[in-house]
Each structure stands twice: as structure tokens, then as C-alpha cells.
Amino acid sequence: MLPTKAYGAQSATAAIAPLEIARREPGPHDVLFDILYCGVCHTDIHMSRGQFPRSIFPMVPGHEVIGKVVQVGSAVSQHQAGDIVGVGCLVDSCRECAECHAGEQQFCNGRVGTYNAYERDGKTPTYGGYSTRMTVDEAYVLKISPKLDPAAAAPLLCAGITTYSPLRHWKVGRGSKVGVIGLGGLGHMAVKIAAAMGADVTVLSTSEGKKADALRLGAADFAVTKTPDTFSRLAGHFDLILNTVSASVNYDAYISLLKRDGSLVILGIPDGPLALNAFGLMLKRRSVSASLIGGIRETQEMLDFCAEHGIVSDIETIPIDKINEAYERILKSDVRYRFVIDIASLR
Ligand code: NAP
Ligand code: ZN
Ligand code: ZN
Image (cartoon, rainbow, N blue to C red):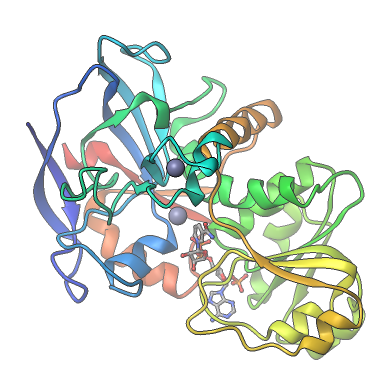
């Protein structure tokens, strides 16, 4: 085993602090890489504070991982030493079910999360990117184009694919009217990607001060959701609304902004069951749905799309010992727009 420096939580009430983990020696299909950067997703906060069922402690968060390959196994064909690679929210899946065959590994019942999960043996915990190196099966390792800045590309591995996948699934293209609720890590990626697909994007935000950023990121319009006028002005306007808020929202109010057959897609984790009125859906055959990250093939497609369109995340780089402060700032929506840990600070 390879002793590896990391930062993680010993319990749901503990701060993120230094600890040591072990990575496996690379097997024939494995890629061993030094981690360069790791994005900080709001899910890291939900998970490390035990807000999802079945937390596994100690927990090393981090699923927006960029690294440089150090060694590959004898059967590895897609990656070689020196390559810049990425790992997102998945490090394995059953590879046999219909979801895996369809390349939608995120829906596989045997999927293995990058952290807060067990390997397919059911007993070895997985540890995320707040660490200096990682061993991952090559089938779950993504290629990062040299056109992309490696630090700013890290958030593409979760925030990028989580917004790209529903934009593709709901067939967003030139002229589509797309609303994005919440301008945070996911939200700002949704704006950039939807705008690059040709959509007419409106940001729906609680933070008046984010208007100039929203327009710079590619939005055509910005509306403050605390103002009731927003909901009359934009009634029946959108084909698709992506909700990236990390809490519950007034679903009926947002449903009223959809056109006939429009969809509200939930990406942010609500803090309880959804409360909504069926009439808002019935009267214009609208839908409410939800989406979970994206599969490996689509994640590579998204990375290539971003390289082609020059899209990366707007980031604030931090050393690892600032991680607890970063969590508090994320909770106050005070991040423009993703923290990325420079893992050199952990070596
Ligand atoms: P984030 O950077 O904190 O952004 C969330 C944004 O939502 C904030 O910037 C804020 O934007 C808005 N917001 C926050 N609290 C709010 C509240 N109480 N009411 C209204 N608006 C609020 O978080 P993130 O990393 O983008 O993640 C967002 C959510 O998506 C989290 O719950 C995360 O766990 C989840 N997630 C889901 C998936 C998936 O596969 N479905 C993947 C990754 C993350 P404004 O200032 O503009 O209002
Ligand atoms: Zn995430
Ligand atoms: Zn499967």
C-alpha cells in the first residue's frame, strides 16, 4: 500500500483536518497519479457533515480531481506517465448492468463514489481528492486537454458534468430559453455551458450583487428572486430551468416560469421532501425532474466541449489549510465561483 497525506473529517461534527490514508499499488488496469488540484463542491459539505444517509468516517472529500500520471498498469492503454488526467464523482461501477452498458454509470446500483463509498469488495472505503495521490481504474479516468488550465478545469469534473448532462438531455440549443437558479459552482458552469450551446440564459439569484458576473459569464438576463415582479415578468418564459440551490425553494413559483411542456430539473439537494402543487404542472403539461452528475463517456464529451469552447471554471485557489474557512464562505454564497485546493500545499 502507498501511504498518502490527506485532509478529512473524523466525524460529522469535526473540522476537516490532516490525516493519513493508504492508496493501493496500481494493478494492471490502474492509473496512479499525483493530485495537482481538487475543486470544493457543496456536496463535500453535505457529506462531511453527515447530511446524507450512511456517511463513512473518516471521510476524505473531493471529487473534482486533476492529477498528473505517475505510473500505469501493464494493461492500461488510454493513459501514460506525464498525462494530465481528471477524476470526477465515480471511480467504479458494476460494468454489467443496463446503465453501465448505456454508459450511464452514475445510475448503476453498484456505482462506487470517489469518496464516502466502498470499493466493489464492499469493505474498502474510497477517499477523495483532498490528498496527494490516487489510484483509479483507467476506465474512470478522464483525459484533460492541454488547452484547459488544470486548476480551473478541476470543477468541470462535477459542476461541469452535472450541468452539461441535463442541458444535453433536454436538448438545449440555439434560442432555447434556459433559467439557472443559484449562481454558485454549478450555476456559473450552467451559464457558461448553456450560453456556448446557443441558449438564451437567465440567472435567477438571491444575490443582487452577482448581476454583472452573470452577464459576463454569458447570461442574457438576470433576475433577483426576492422581488415578486420577477415572477410576473418571466411567467411562462422558459423551456428549461436548472435548479442548483443547496436548499429547498418555492417550486410552484419556478414552475410558473415554464412554458407549456417546460421542465424544472433539480440538481441542488433540497433539505426535505418537495412541496408543490400539481395544478402548476397540469395546466401546461410541465415536468419536474432531477439529474445526477453524468456518465464517463458524457463527462469526456463535456471536457472536450469545454476545451473546444474555451470554458473553464472561475476559481479562487486556496491552500488546503484554508478548507474550513472555504466551507463557511460557500455556505454564505461568498465564492466567485469555485474554490480549488492547490494540492502542492499538502506535499
Ligand atoms: P454553491 O456553490 O454553494 O451554489 C449554490 C447557490 O445557490 C449559491 O451560490 C446561491 O446562489 C444559491 N443559494 C444557496 N442557498 C440558498 C438558499 N437557501 N435559497 C436560495 N438560494 C440559495 O453550491 P454548488 O457546489 O453549486 O452545489 C449546489 C447544490 O448542488 C448542492 O446541494 C450540491 O450538493 C448539489 N450537487 C448536486 C449534484 C447532482 O449530481 N445533482 C452534483 C453536484 C452538486 P445565489 O447567490 O445566486 O442565490
Ligand atoms: Zn460535486
Ligand atoms: Zn452497472
